[in-house]
Image 1 (cartoon, rainbow, N blue to C red):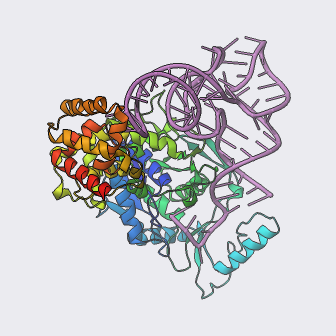
Image 2 (cartoon, chains in turn purple, brown):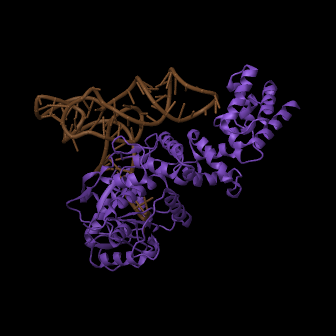
Length: 472
RNA sequence: GUCCCCAUCGUCUAGUGGUCAGGACUCAGGAUUUUCGAUCCUGCAACAGGGGUUCGACUCCCCUUGGGGACGCCA
């Protein structure tokens, strides 16, 4: 059994989106599961749409998700870029031309567009009419595209690992353009040449490519290349069942990082879209590598459901150790003005432990973390409900007692409960104003934990400040 | 319009001829509680429709309907 070789081949026209990320993940998992190779190839043959920023964004997204790739033996860089391989594609196109399996087409783009429009208008199938196919006489001195001469009789069957056998009639396929009139090669030529050259054994991609597959198989046949195995995975749709797009919310994986999602949660969610393993919902990466199989991917499209993602994300946060949560938390703390150098990590650990079970995402966690490290804290509008004249006596009483109390959980608990008894109030009545005064928020971990972590100095200072404010 | 794919709770899915059609998210109710949350119970909720095949269809076949994709000198 020879080595499994797969690739992820995005075109750099934008960020790495959810669908692409899942395709990359499936490829990656398949390769890692089978002990094979996973390559990254950038399909940038259309210069008008490709940008370097987009390439960076894709690499960044892959890194974030933890999807590493192998360097292809034939490449100088760990990323294969098609623009660097134009000579190969052109020579392959020339080869087909020479062998009579392709021909020059002098129709202009404008003419073709016009004919297509007309066909659509008359409800005819918009196909190339093949008018340049059999042209004879001297070649005109005009720019030309090269078209592949497709066979017109018989059928092509795609043996797909997820869709099963899919049959296409050759007569429904027209002669595709393999090089443009400016000499640049097109997608269908490039994929085939590259996948063959890189000895790709399994092509795992979105099922929007299923229709391209028979065309590509014709090219494999023409070049006498071995045909790889195909696996077309279903697409991801929005809540309205339309193709996932910006109007459904965030589609860039980076945006999820910004919004406080953990890459592990993202991976876990994406893999469960279309694939399952009994009743298991949560998987470590190693479990996925062990258990995932493309052949088990479902056949129908899945709808992207942010709620489930939220749940998975919260699960990862809740069970995450401080060591696990700190790296993704730091950039969000930095945004709130808390620099890494100024953080007392001894103190950060208990904060995370107290916060992780009530944080749905890392942004929330960072916002709740801030008050333990900032000197000046912002006060939520909602705290006004508790920081008022009516509660002034409570704050005063608490302040006096706390001044004499060691800042540890149990003594703090005793102290505050003592105040409750003395004033004849429930703990909630006492805890809320204190919480508001020391955290600037109306929600936080348990008040005894908050005070202990905060320390006596900061806590008293903040309570004093509020007392002074209320008096004036 | 032509070709291709798809069809189990609202959503993600299990199911491969005989199941009370299972799990998860969401939602509702309850328990717990020091705020928020978390947690634990409980509950609501599905085989798109119609024909076959079969002793028996969610499961196999066909049709209809619905959804998606492709039909580019985009990838």
